[in-house]
Image: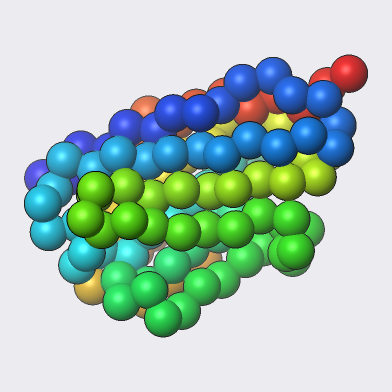
Length: 124
């Protein structure tokens, strides 16, 4: 069982930046692919970014390419989502997810473990 805890959300003005963190309880976190997803009010949860368990593959949703960067620090059992040039349409609850030996899937179903989410609000 892997317990994931997101942090780093908050209120930011358009054009601003935030870095989300995902802390994992699993010491073998390096064996897990990490995905970030988001869910806006009234909408389904959708893919944002993912990194394979080896770290060699990353995928991004088109609207965040060039603005968001996914990274991980296996020594600290942490994953991150650096978000720059934020827009109001980025407002959502952001979730991290983990998949054992995953390959950066953009689908929700392969991910075995999910965090509780952190709210990101982009507004002036």
